[in-house]
Image (cartoon, rainbow over all chains, first blue to last red; front, top):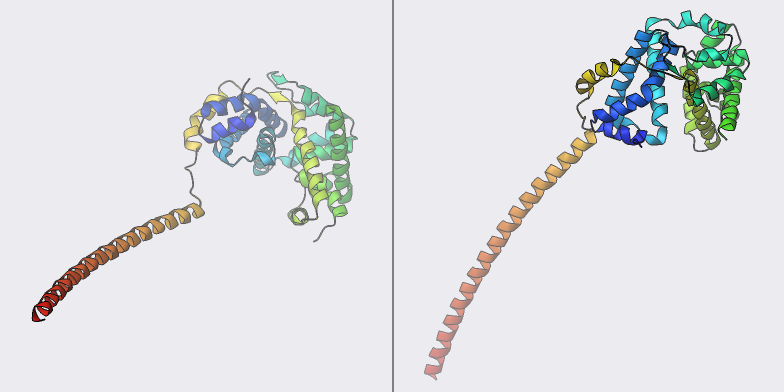
Length: 185
Length: 145
């Protein structure tokens, strides 16, 4: 059985490249999927993967297990760096209509041009939970999480009152939490 | 802006999704920092766990096989030199000063000890001399009697 993530990250902090390689093999697919989902282009998603794992190498000594799992840490890093790239190139606004036009939560899943997407139980579970949300709640969550829009920006772009946007996010995340807990039980 | 627990609960989802403006986020941070905001902190932990799961929705996509090689080539240069915290410098300086002081003190004490030994030897010599004089006097006194 291979080492758990926190042990690997500890080894990375000591300069162990093999440990980083193992973490890469474990989580690069997730980071790549986030990159494709948020940035839309395979080459840029690979640049994101590269940036994230070099950051993992540099910041491994700063990882604090008390603040979350390694997967959440890597995922959060991937999302933040992807948002930086979207903001740097001013592409967020161009993606909003595409997000709002998504008719089903199946579009949350990534269809790789190389057909290399790997479905997983977690993916199906989260997609199923998202499928139960009303469309406007799902869109609000996606605009906030994957596009990095603030409530004000979502309200402005969707023409909805600010309070409505906040309520939708609250309701959506609450329902998702309940569904995922129930699914895990 | 000061938030009540109920007001924070309305904003909690937007807070964990990073969708609040700076002013509102700062108000939420201040609310969460209060000792009595136990329930709000529990809510944030719960919603954060759910938000973390959102990334699961995208699944996994294999990067190209050559990508690891590109990353590995950048690793040595990417590792920063270990930075020494100012407190560590202060601790090292304090330890060095303590060592210097201990060395100086030891030398001082050693000098004082040498002086004391020399003084004692001089006193013993004086005492021996006095004893000789005393003995001579006692001999002269006995002869006189």
